[in-house]
Image (tube, rainbow over all chains, first blue to last red; front, side, top):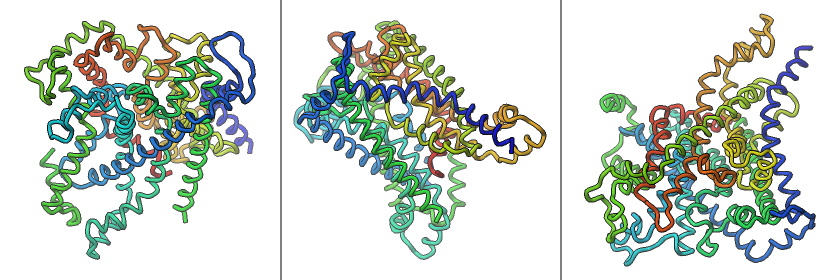
Amino acid sequence: MTQNRAALIFAWALLAPAIIYVLVIVAWPLIETFRLSFTDASLRKTTNYVGWRNYLKIFDRDFLEIIIRTFTWTFFSVLLKMLIGTFGAVLLNCAVPGRHVFRILTMPPWIVPMAIGIFMWGWMYNGQFGMISGLLQRFGIVDGPVAFLAYGNTAYWSTIVTDVWIGVPMVTIYFLAAIQSIPRDLYEAAWTDGASRWMRFRRITLPLMGPAVITMSMLSLISTFNSFDIIWILTQGGPSGSTTTMIIDTYATAIGSKKYGEGAARAVVICIFLSLFCIAYFRMTRKLATAEKT
Amino acid sequence: MALKLFKKDQTRAMIDRYSWAELIGIYVGIALFLFFMLAPFIEGFLVSLKPLAQLFSSPYSFLPENGSFEAYRTMWVSVPSFGRYIFNSLLISTIATIIVLILVVPAAYAFARFKFKGMAMVLAAFLAVSMFSGAVLLIPLFRLMRTLGLLNTYFAMIVPGAAFLIPSAIWLLRTYMMRIPIELNEAAYMDGASQFYTFRRVILPIARPGIIVVAIMTFIGAYAQQFIFALTFNSKTEFMPLPVGLFAYFGKQEVIWNELMAASFVGIAPAMVIIFFLQRYLVGGLTAGAIKQ
């Protein structure tokens, strides 16, 4: 068929602009990051290849600590997003008056500019004047003011809470859609058989939400791993490195200290982890798709 | 509206009847959930009403005493260019959205309608792009922007930002376009229409609602995520978008918190207007791409 050939050319012509744009803005910089990671690039005019030196330099105890911290930080954040997202989705799915308004009210954290939400949290975490410390003191849970961002441990959890807050609306709305796509007959059949509400939730809602939970936790894992704005605005990785994740560390090295070569090596390590997540995600979605067909 | 909801509830199946205890449980749960989602906004709003002296006083008081909207007036005085920051944010988001649409509409159509060797790979590659954040690629992007002479211009914030908005826009629009019946293409072909004519005159008009959803989602994404590129690629005050411009309220000595919060609320007003008028599209847009795939 001659039409086929024309269609082939037409299809690729449609794709070409988007492909070229992404090649220039994403793919080329990605390759460039790999190249730079083997150089001593900095603000100086000359750049030399230094082999694996950058990698040997960064792999010390501090960097391993940063990697572990990134993973635990990401893990707790994703876990909380999934739990709170499920909690919210199940409640918002209840046929109670006002649910449409409640659904709209979950969306602001996701939709307002991230930096603004983060500023508001910054104030809430303030020890002297912030809401959390103020209310905790009012109810007598703590004795004096707690400056949440001033101590390593509390800063770590504070940044997680803010990250969860920004991530939950999307998870909730997504889970809500997943719950609503479950056939109603199942619930009616179970109800006729005398299954309690809790039973219906345990045996119908939760298992059938499974694929959505897996998909969302993978997507959430990737975006949380990349989280930058929250930590940078709240703590800039401090106090004394307690909230320094790999992204923050890379930014501080590359843009803060202008050590481009070393920063690039750190970015490459992030890219390796992201690629692994990516492959896992594609595998998982393909498995889910074939499971659905059978 | 309340009346309508009530009637609908009455006619619902018995399965949706809740006992009083269950109803209370549900509302308490929703209240807790929404409190977590909205607490920063409530606190932020109360802060914007308090005079600065009251803010920095102990013990903590939740409600403002003799609160006023004074900060909403003085914020324009303390940071005269605040209006400019909002304008910059809107401008950057608008241009980014236009670029994304120009690139994405044809690409999404190609992915939705044509099945040629290699296209699945290209689609996967696009999706992979969305998983690398700009933060990882900052160094080469910085050098690229410098080479292109875009540093400290609007385009330093628009061009990289748009690239990371492309994948999800393609995904969303492709899903929408796959629902357009292929018979339309066949009929156009029978009538002797060229591929381009079919795309331009048959597909585009039908896909318009989907394109609008993608435009809204892209605009919100562009409006919400202008931080890292603006922080790194632009140092000119006159080009700063809102998220970076807000740092102007961080003085040398102390932060003018009440004005910062007032400014934040003025800054998020556009996004809020969008939520309330277009929330139906938003929910659809957010979930359309993923659930069925």
